[in-house]
Image 1 (spheres, rainbow, N blue to C red):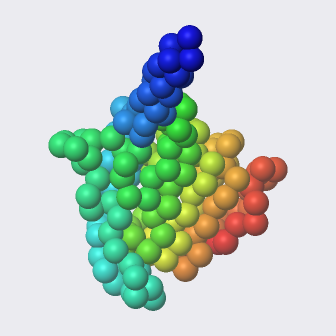
Image 2: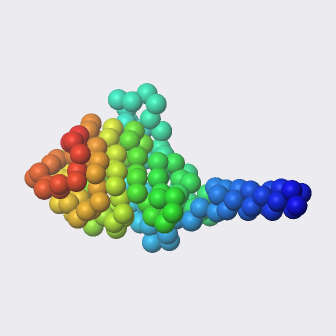
Image 3: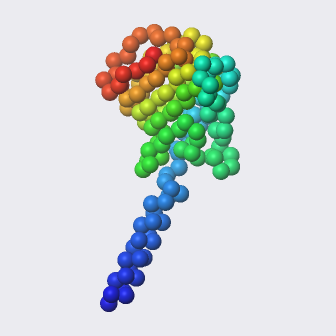
Length: 164
């Protein structure tokens, strides 16, 4: 009886380990992967855009839908919810991004986004789009040293101290 119990217990443990492995996590949603790739393509990678940070590197450079790195949850700077697979965090600080942020950016299609860090890039003094206010789950926003031009302060109750 004891042997049978140990056998069942070991099977249960094996099943538990199998289902909790990282390979069982949900993949990034295609529409979010597409939005991230469109966001990437809207900028030029320019080392001087993050010249104030000696550790800067283009995090988006390896983003692709081909090969082993096709899951955006494994992309550098992207954080996904472990249960749903939705993109909830984006840390592209010091990523050598150069270009303008405008209202039609695909970034604003990431509706589950809770944290957004775009510090230490160069956004060419473009206005920060008011659409950032539509990211209703956003609790953290950092645009410091990215040379944006704020156009107004948004009323976002959930947003923690932001660095503009």
